[in-house]
Length: 290
Image (cartoon, rainbow, N blue to C red; front, side, top):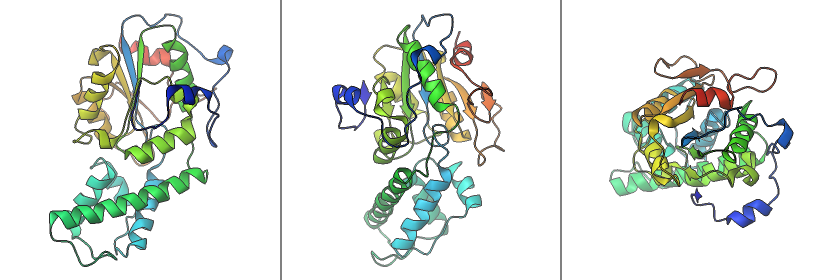
């Protein structure tokens, strides 16, 4: 399994205990598996922010706190951050875009940066502190899985053992932030069965560029035709990345992305859903690639 940057061996993951906040695996008898076993190689890829957890407000608050601590005068409102995060993928690109539009700020590091080296240093410092603050939010039990995530993951993990199903997670977040969230909310007892986990650090170009999804396909242990792969996303830039990679896409929108144009999506829902209001199950995903 290509578990990017975990620093934990598969054997350690299998023997580990669930982290605080993790939803335990469903009992075997309660995991719904399609009556038809997966035969041709197929893939299912989860985005993280907005799909596995509704985290955009946590990211925004972490950025604002980082700005404040470094003496940066800017603050991102909920309305502006919705616009920004639906336009630019990745934290560092967001800051570079914003500072480029509204001016590079003074900070406790010194006067407004003028060289590329100085700009990169400021953004790196802000991002590192933002990640630390975000992790504090997650361990403080502010973050939680969106409805239906644990259920659907358990369904696909059960099906993986019966057929040729490849599983991946692709996030635009930094590797440190992504893996921390997954470890604490999803748990190693699930993550150990995913074939590929990629973060924003693992690719040069962020969504809406399809590079991260193409890289996931490349790293799958067996070749999967992109048309046989379903991506679960929450935003327009994520949908654009999945479609540019030649994949099917299910959008489970959040309050900040609900008004975007998801006309190109194969399925659009407000959430994956738990019983008795399940909106997406494994059978629905597999129907898209048959």
